[in-house]
Image (cartoon, rainbow, N blue to C red; front, side, top):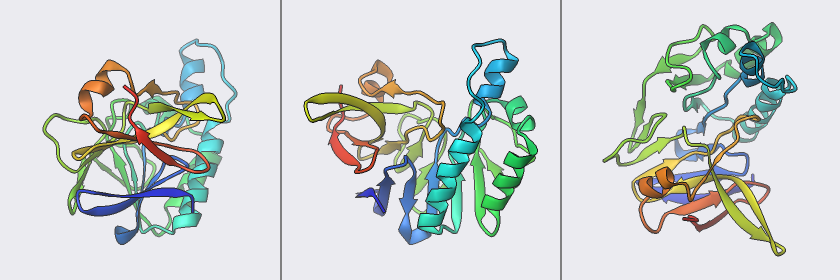
Length: 220
């Protein structure tokens, strides 16, 4: 399993190359910002059409992570759906696929700003969730400790073979983790954006995703 192991708030965690977070002790897999149905939402609002494959691609990658880790609990850390209508408009094969992935698992949908209300798609819908030393919520809050959040879709630059590549990244300091977006069409915010530079403490790391995740000083 390709990943970067680290300790946060006393919990031993692994940042997977896919952008998922694995907590082996609790058999817990966390993903953030799937934004399922984004292509449908853009088309519905008259935007430039996108190929309608992002739901299947995102679920394929999630299925692979579930197979690798065999979790007991899955937390989707908000903005799992691009909006409430996108959740309702999911095609039946996608809904059945999600139900199959959920089978036998404790599945938690954390409330996001795109999907603030519960969806009729199985699992449990919560505003936030505390497990042991860790607090799972969608948007980081001031004064938090042991917080794991998403929302900002952070990305960081990494130099490989003389080239600079920007990839989704986990941001990590002693108080919080900001998760990368997991969804196929989500885009990202560079870690040197003012909102992220203010949010993360000096000395924060960026764990850059990909085939071999690597931790670098968070670019500012």
